Image 1: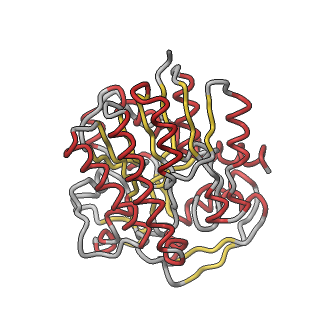
Image 2: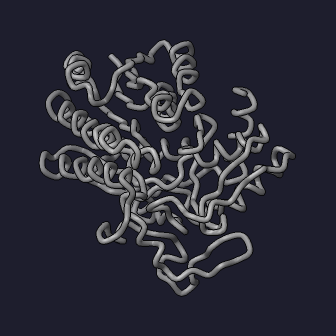
Image 3: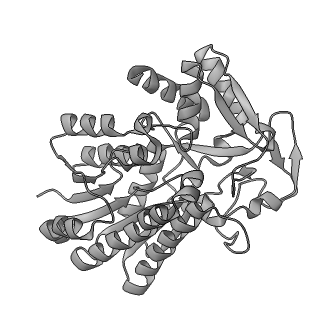
Amino acid sequence: MADIAIVTGSSGMVGSEATEFLLDKGFIVHGIDNDMRSVFFGDEASTAWNERRLIETYPNYHHHSLDIRDRANLDKLFKLHEKDIKLIVHSAAQPSHDWAAEQAMTDFTVNANGTLVLLELARRYCPGAVFIYMSTNKVYGDQPNAFPFVEEDTRWELEAKHPYYANGIDESIGLDECTHSLFGVSKLAGDLMVQEFGRYFGMKTACFRAGCLTGSGHSGTELHGFLSYLMMCTMKKTPYKVFGYQGKQVRDNIHSRDVVEALYQFYLKPGVGKVYNMGGGRFSNCSMLEAIAICEQITGNKLNWDYIEKPRAGDHIWWISDMTRFKTDYPDWDIQYNLQQTFEEIHDGLRQRL
């Protein structure tokens, strides 16, 4: 019998990318996704289209419309397959700063309690499985905003003499005495629990603290899915809002396929309680203004955007991930998609769906 992988958030961007990748590797995949994204952000953010596509395309994909907080029904799934489960990719989440501030209880129970439910079931039924948690760079809070920046024409840039200038921000930056956003805190709670289960119980766990993850599988909306939503607004000539920092805030962006390749490398050679920053790094990053320019170039449309002076709470002025730790542990992995390729694929995927 083929090995089993469980993927949470299986209809979302990283989850669906992981699902297809693992199916191609010969796994039987049980996907867990109840389209909470439409509950968080409305019908435009629904992942139902991706759920239908996976079910119709892959006979070895089995979909379960379950909430990750629903221990009783998840227990039945884990108990049925037990040690045949070799890999758990946990990418389900409430992913928005702003939404978390309005619905703190739901945000925390999804991101923290849901993660604990999955860890406990893995420990009980398949303790030898690899458990991978899609975390976020927001666990570090906004302390990078105190770095010395230089204002350029289209972006904020770190001073060249700063130790993070060459390769980006590494895992040593620390977590305390800063503003994380409530979303950042709930994700950090899950992150620390994944580490603790690894070290305390000897489980093979990893937290991938991601920058902006993107690709054609994103159901972008105003509150989450930066590049996808930006491209959608440019294509549809829908007004867009830029929040703070003169639109020069910088993000690194990594294609979901490159992320999944990294997750699979960890599966092949797992560690215990590992933490890795994951993003586009110096290879693939842009400011908001630069992203707008690329969308306009690809679509031929002019984006109608408004500037909101106040930035979002806990938002970064500049974030570029240093992936030296991961590349040292897994030297065969590297980013394949550059920024232009990623934008063009997002555009082509949206054109088909819209």
